Length: 138
Image 1 (cartoon, rainbow, N blue to C red):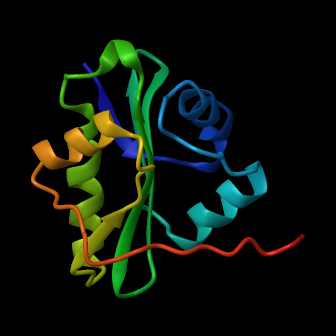
Image 2 (cartoon, rainbow, N blue to C red; image 1 turned 45 degrees about the vertical axis):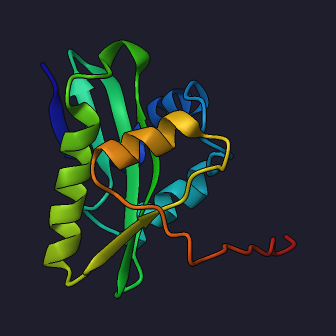
């Protein structure tokens, strides 16, 4: 049994441990970045708890037009129980209430299990786009 609730600032340590233990998730935010993200996107990020343990976590935000999901992770022993789908459904519902009409995720090209997961849920790969990034020096 699990409960889906808001991911909150106090969940940082537990979420970081989960994300670091999950293949396919890249660099994890600092605690300050995590807290800032949650403040900018209140009530959108999601946690799954079971018997006092954080077993799922996902960041969710939007820019007013498009929604974005990041760092979806479910502890290995809790997978295939509908936790990820429940977290995604909750996030998409909340984004829709914010007026967002499209949601995107970014996956590493080598993350084949992740790609298969999203395709099973009916998400489509965008082959018409390329993503470019620029790291801003500190």
